[in-house]
Length: 220
DNA sequence: GTCCAGGGTTCGT
DNA sequence: ACGAACCATGGA
Image 1 (tube, helix red, strand yellow):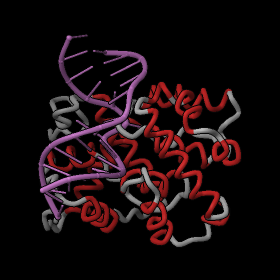
Image 2 (image 1 turned 135 degrees about the vertical axis):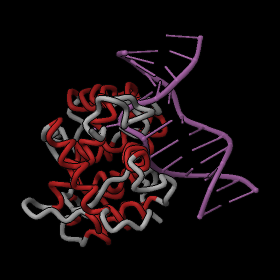
Image 3 (image 1 turned 60 degrees about the horizontal axis):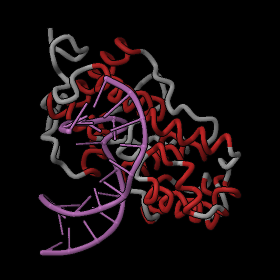
Image 4 (image 1 turned 90 degrees about the vertical axis):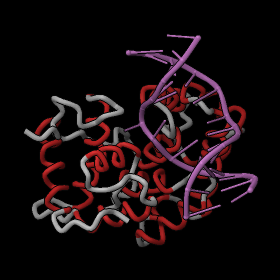
C-alpha cells in the first residue's frame, strides 16, 4: 500500500503542474484511429517508440492497419511487418489474439458501450495484454479515466517519497485515481497528460534518478 | 561492445 | 503473490 499521506493529493497536483509548466501538453496518443492506439500499445511493450513507429508505418503502407486485414493475416507474415519493434514473433501472436478478441466482441463500437471495469476485465483476459497495456488502451483508445502506472511513475513517485515503489500495480492505480481530482478539466484529460509527462520527464532527465539537479521536480 | 527503450507479460515456484 | 525467464530491434 502507498504511504498514507493526507497531503498526497496536493503533492500530486504540485508534480503535475510543475511538469505541465515545464513541458506543456504532450498530445498523446499520436495515432489516427483507436485501432492504431491498440496496436501501438502492444508493440511498445519493452520497446523504444521510435521502433514502434517504423512497425506501424510498415502496416500502414501495406494497408494492413484495419481489423479485417489484421485478423486475416498469417502470424508469420505479420511478424515480418512489425520486425523493427522487436520481439516480433511474440508480438505478432499477441496482436492476433487481440484482433481475435476485438472481432469476437463485435468491434470497437460495441465495446465502447461497456463500463470501464467490464472493459478492463475483458482486456486482461486477452493473451499479451497485462495491466499496463490494458490501461493504456482504456485511456488512450477508449478515453476512460484510468491512470496508467508504468515504471517511470513508480520511480518518480517513490523518489519523491509518496510511495515505496514496490506496491502492487492495482494498489497504485487506484490510489492515484483516488487522489487526482481536477477541478477544471476532465479526469481523462489529466490522466492522459500526467502519464505522457512522466515519460517526457524521464526522457529529458537522468533515467535512473528522475529527480536529479535541474529537473522540473527538484525542490528549490 | 554494452545498455536500454513509451521498463511488459507469462510462467514457475 | 513474488521472482525469473523470455522475447529481439536499433539508437546512444
